Structures are given as C-alpha cells and as structure tokens.
Length: 71
Image 1 (cartoon, rainbow, N blue to C red):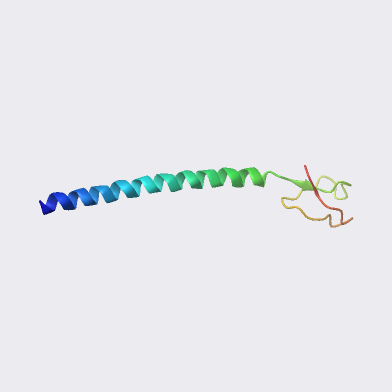
Image 2 (spheres, rainbow, N blue to C red; image 1 turned 60 degrees about the vertical axis):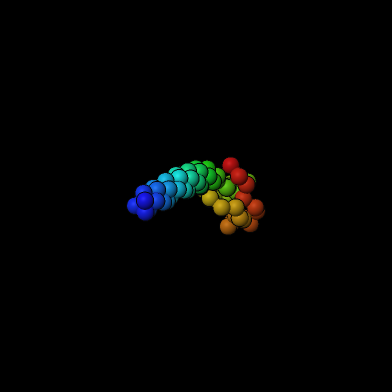
C-alpha cells in the first residue's frame, strides 16, 4: 500500500511540474514577440540632420537637439 501511495504522489508531482513548465514556456514566447516588436520601432530627427540615421530609443538629435520622432 505504501508503494502505491508513493507512486501516486510522485506521478502527481511530475504531472504538476510538467504543467508549470509549459506555462512558463508560453510566457517566454510572448515576451520574445513583444521584444521583437519593440526592436523595430525607429526614431529619427524631424529635420533629418543626420540623413536617414535611425535610433532604437527616444531622445534628442545630436546635431540640432530636437526630440526624435517615431518613424
């Protein structure tokens, strides 16, 4: 009887841990999609002081100090 109880407890623990790993893998996949979407956002100077130079973060133009705009 103890062997059966032990096997049932181990099986339940394995099943529970498998369920949690699938959920965390789905969350990692969603995080990667969000990161990929934000990486494509480009910022440029509205005066195009540096030509077609684009940045991945918002800030100010190094030449005219205007705020960069999303493109």
